[in-house]
Image 1 (cartoon, rainbow, N blue to C red):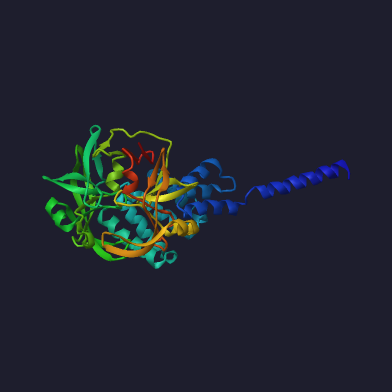
Image 2 (image 1 turned 135 degrees about the vertical axis):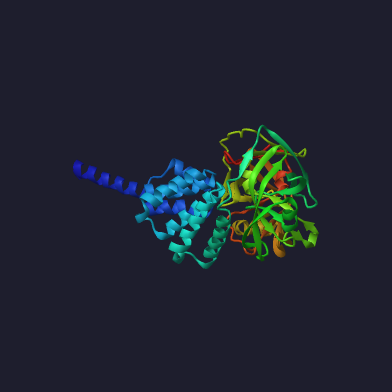
Length: 430
């Protein structure tokens, strides 16, 4: 073989190897989409920062819109969406436009631009209804009622003159409660990161002067699937210690819905995500105090993300990094059927078959499950041992979860201090 022919053969072999080593554009896009489908915004963001070869500029912006939204960069997310919809609209499929408009509505709601959120929802229902299944269309129609009802309400505002300290206590079921002041009354309220909107029962809404907006919409209990009607209301002012919040949105719920009969437990007020996130950073100390610093502390930890209005936490369990929902309004930790199917043989070998009650606002249901003991779970710089974890072998009714569970109070109470930071997006313990 001549030298020139040999060099040509070697070149072709190297070229062939290079083609095999570089993932195709469609394979790269599937990798990104898979992470998005799993709600693994953490690895998706890392991948976007380190390797977008094989991903078109348009697709990079598309996934960037999701990660900006997930890590509370809502205005940045909307700028990316505007670029895509204004400049690249003709090359976007209708299904991608639907996804982008849904992210935009979420950004608008979180930044209290309710009228813009309502406009995004109306566009979804008028232009792209053919792309929506009936359940999604109903959900968007419901959100339209909420955003439209709030369209004239000014954005929620917080006044924090200096670092503030708020006392907290455990209620009869072990949930964190704080005192809030509205008008001349001070009332105990559940502090719940998983509450998408702060809630109040009808009796207390009337007692505390919450203004009803004349808007009613459907809400449901995730555990039972019970659907009920709630109203929208706004509190002109709400005090958390020395912190003043204005134009606070509440969903006003029937008293019966916020009463859990099997355990004789009534929830009068629930302080939810929109209020908690605006505090930016909260230190919950085991000694019964909650400290809100005037300036949040930056960190490179970044283990907290938002899926819509649901906080997501990246944790290490065993040798795996898994994504969980994070819920200060849950007294115990539950692992979902996704966890069961991933580790079924180990759970069947070491777990104890049982049945458990799952519930919240709207009632309770009983389900088959396994109980696991002494599960080690690492969050940030600390490792906790969960003495008793419920593992659901079947999907929780009326929920479609792809993450691995819901972390509750049994994790938080193991440490002297928990730090919730919605600015740099992290949770850590001391």
